[in-house]
Each structure stands twice: as C-alpha cells, then as structure tokens.
Image (tube, rainbow, N blue to C red; front, side, top):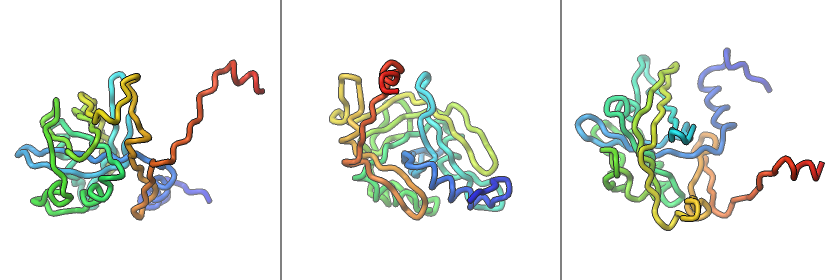
Length: 211
C-alpha cells in the first residue's frame, strides 16, 4: 500500500510513522514551572542529534484542542529554559507509564508514580532518583511546526550510576543498563535485555577482500 501524506489524516500518519520509526528511546522528562512545581512526562519522539555541542531533540505535540495549547513539558521548558531527560529502563517502565496519565494540573505525576527526586548538578530541575542515568539540559531552541514543538536541548551535565560505566572509554555498559524502547502504539515496548547483537564495522580494505 502507498499513503499520500498530503491527503492522509494526521492520525493515520501518526499510526504509520510510530510503527516504522522504531524502536525509539524514551525520554522521561522532568521540568518545572515558574512556581517550582514539577512535571514528569515520557516522550518517544526523542533522540540525540549531535555531540559537539551535545544536543538532544524532543518532539512534543500540542494538546488535542481547538486552539494551540502546549503540553506542560513544552510550556515549562519555554518559560524556564531547563529540563532533565531521565533514561527509562526496564525496572522503572511501569512507573514511567503512570507519568503518561493525563492527571489534573494540581496532581504530581512524580508522586502518583511513586518516584522521588534528587537535585541535579547544574540545572534547577531535579532528576528522578530511581533513574540510573539522566541528561541535564538547557533549551537551545524551540521550533513550532504545525501542531507540534521540536525542542532542542543542550546537554550540560550527564549522570550515570558508576556500575553502568566502563572507564576505558568511558563507555556505557548498555547490556547491563537494560533500557527499553517504544514500538508502535497500543502500549507496545521492547526490552534490550539479552537481545544485543554485534555487527562490527567493515573497513574498505576488508570489504575488498570479500568482494
């Protein structure tokens, strides 16, 4: 089948893209409003984009309303300029899912999920204590495109529990961290536990020997 994205409904395009652009890392984002109230929400329209400077990108759709109403995360980042990406691993997956619930504004997702927070090293927004790794970010820019916002954040500090660091690199011991990924909709995720495959890069000289 072929789909003309100029004619298809936005929901149809969403269903197709999230099923094909997968698996996707999950950013459990903590942010703070001007009064200091915390928000936590997961996003899978997320990835790192460059390393010099270190930039991560986050896609945040507006709330489904007649007018353009940003979600709390986008509004908080735009107003305070800071956020934290907490890495989602298998052991906090259920709590992450609670944070996706559309609670009333005066209800804390962090409390409802049974999370606690600890101060970040650089930004005012705290990280989630139960997360084994986190990226502290400052807003680089926000682009409004259609009914979405693309947020670029500059990573200003990285936290990883010591047991997940190989100091030789330093490298992340990803086989032990057990991050999870988002697949298509309907609550589908993928584990990374016991699922790594290793495909070494091939130099041109090596390739010529076999072709």
